[in-house]
Image (tube, rainbow, N blue to C red; front, side, top):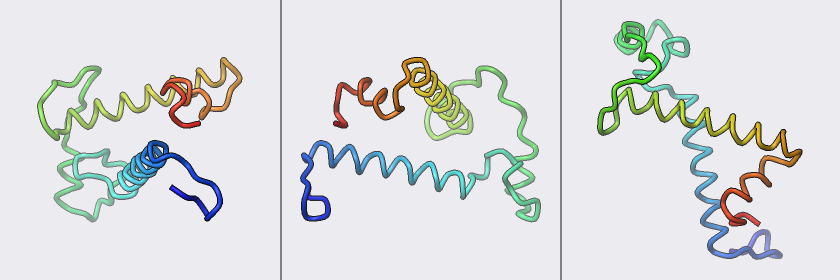
Length: 113
């Protein structure tokens, strides 16, 4: 792939770049457009049924029940694992005094650069 007509990157790195942009956009949109079973803190009380359903949801506890498919419990676990990943990469970068991208690059075997 050619960037700005000068530099070229390999197709593999272009795919990784596209995947990262895709993940960023999904995360951004999930933040801006909360699902009906998300935290009611971000929902507008005037949304009616969606807000009432979210407000009536019981707490999931430390380990929610594992159910197959796109369920509320799966979304809670995915969010918790994402937070653990961010904490881990941030702590590693801090302890090793390296930029976060360098730490991630090491973890993926030099796939970025």
